[in-house]
Length: 352
Image (cartoon, rainbow, N blue to C red):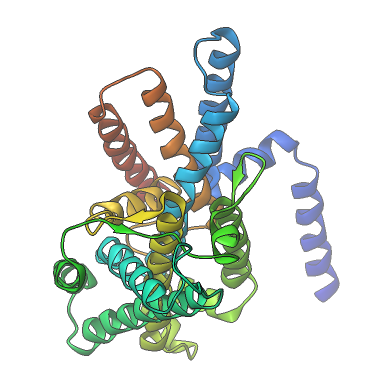
């Protein structure tokens, strides 16, 4: 009996391996969260590159344009990594845009106070790093606080973080006011987070390194399995010994930390910080995740999807800027793409 069952399993495996590569590719596109965005991004990129080669006036492939686009992708991508992990765990954080600004401003002011300004006498090489640790700690603590309030009082995270968004936005104005803040930290901090390797800005390198780290966190560490389990089926997660509250607190903390890091990286890139610079970024980050294959109800998503979703949004934005299209065209595109992505995700979820 056991031998017959083994033969049957072996035959099934052989049959699966003998399938054409095209069929395997189609299955991967249908079953993987990042399958759809991979095809879409590749298609858009091929079309845009072809247009750039055919029309020299369309400067998509110019070194300056590529450098600017890569710089712009990184801050939102870093924030989207944290938002994506939280969405996999089945929650949202609408306050990440406000934390993006607040933590960056706190970091910049502390850097200047501790002697980390490049133009200050006796500029300290350590001050920017110490100030950054404080900023990241604030973002992490704020995220954990949002989780505790959400779980303790059993209210939707959408409501908790909507209130937190307004609170942190007000805290930013209370702490610094409405004026922009100069942020030019001393070396080596400026090079580590603001330098370039060819056309690739340091912020993009950090984004890619973090994406790799998050990939291993989600797929090669038990906490990643916990995120998927809690977001996919909370009761089943509890049944196998997972603590949903602890898992969601960690996910919220990661989202807050990544929002703070994104704000600091963006501040170094442009050498200044706007108190309202993060307004609306929380929705764009969620959009990047949804376009990248994340399910709104949790339990589904991938790091590659986040990276490609963010890259697709900025590619389309860049194309619209190059052809001098009105800014609202980009908003229309993103809005339509979100609806299409949600419809596709729901269809896949029903089939599975």
